[in-house]
Length: 288
Ligand code: 13P
Image 1 (tube, rainbow, N blue to C red):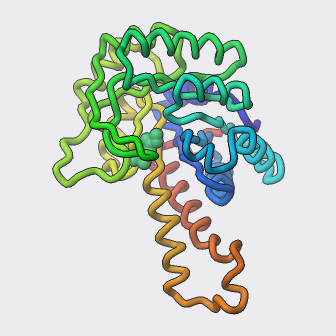
Image 2 (cartoon, rainbow, N blue to C red):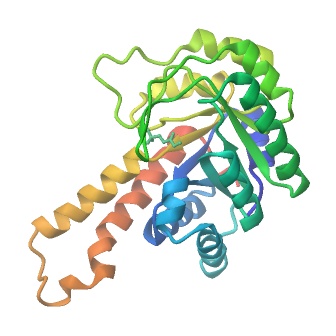
């Protein structure tokens, strides 16, 4: 099936009560690992690209080329959506033009009227090209890509207004945080999530900050309409730890140990395992 918009895969997930993992990619190894894990688990998957990661990888055209190439060369047949994560208006347009199949326009830091107006424009431009759109209301706390957010619980009435623009998925702040959850974290606000679900009907909801949320809360979110869960930090941790252990183990670095393919192999394997675990937890295995 290859590269597709996220619309259908998320609507199916919503109807069948599971969530599709949206895993952030940072380099070739992660991308390949995520695609192979999804294929093995027979799961639809989304690849999230932050503006910073897009720049790091060389630019959006490089990302599109890499992902399309891997899908073809690795015979990936499960549905894959290539998605801009937390994009500005300008970058959402760039990604639509570069061949992404899904974009998030994150206008949550602007006044709501401006968020609404710009989301509407992104929906028009994206849908004209069959690209799906995620919008955000409220705010996700924590730090991502150098951007620090304090988090803000979404207003269900604003969620309804933005949902009515015809977006394909909605990220709403419900106490979720990017990165590690602090010891004194209050947990997710399921009362607000329920209100948001009541006013947005069958719209797939998105849970950002998917690393480190207890499984019971993940399951409850899915029951309340969450159909896409973003994961980045957990993959960063397992990748980096596995790479560090490789060096600490004192492999024969003078011999073949300097080979970058060997150096990155433990991290690559660790990402495959972490993604498979998430796919099982989110219930999307054997759905593609
Ligand atoms: P984590 O880094 O907490 O997994 O969150 C990822 C995310 O929400 C990307 O948008």
